[in-house]
Image (cartoon, rainbow, N blue to C red; front, side):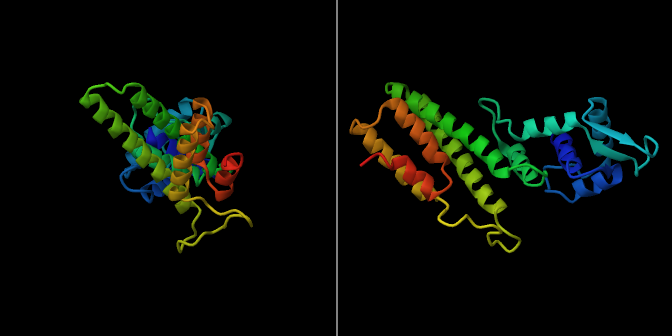
Length: 236
């Protein structure tokens, strides 16, 4: 399905011929997009039958036949960009492509897309953490599997953080648009210190389990140091 959404993302930027779409996909990230035009034209035909794109002008097999995105195609693309992996599914290359395309689709807030996925993985981490805490007497195999899943989810969250920073950087690796005055981006270490502090406050009885879970979600997805300060403002 990657080729379908890659085509929709390109057409979101304006109408293109089949030949132009093939050339742009061939120049895309290796390993995730088709290198053969033989994959592009059947995909365009399927998208057209589904009402997600429409064409006009040249004959059906002409390389200059122009395709454009329909309203249905725009909705399909928007929904896919924000759809998180199914339970137990591995994000893999599809998540990489999704974040990459989100940064190229006009009118799409790539940070909002990253945030939606980060929130999903943080919530999964919380579920696995609670299951591990509630199953203190579980066997060694299940305990090891639980830790493996927690570390896997943590690595995906860290990748999303890195992706967001890279997407905000200019061609030379410098930040193209720095944070507004008074806003400093939070680092992984900042978030980890806040999480540890929240655990201490929970142990001291200052937070309920529900309050802890809610604040952990906010802390792990915080983007600025100000977000973290506000989260701790009512705690000593």
